[in-house]
Length: 159
Image (cartoon, rainbow, N blue to C red):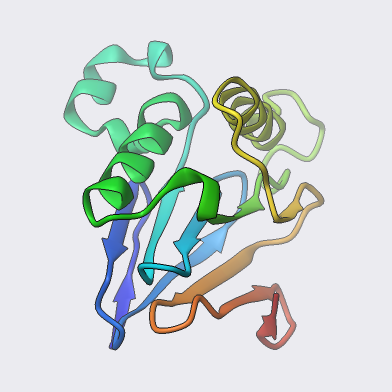
């Protein structure tokens, strides 16, 4: 059963019949985590790097921001028995889509926020597809942690 993770959204599951999927990651970033021992996986699709950009929105939807969404993703996985040291972590997105001249650099700023938070918390990235100027879609199969990536105009590839 496909479970769609929208923009500023997150899903975590231990249901082996579930496949988590998020579409059209441009400057947004999708983070997939999976613990193979307990078969718990999660997917976050966040938009912006820092909740201080709009504290009101951050209170209403912490999943919109890297600094509040990423901790929520890991905490939800821990509640289902996942452990940080066993997780496979995949980071996708952070492209420069609507900002071709690089004025805002949202994709780069999102990626830097992820790296800073992961470095601080000793989280290693197992695979990443970030930057460039293409949209990406990622899906995570909970039964075995199989993860597929689709880049604009391409077919899904297992990563």
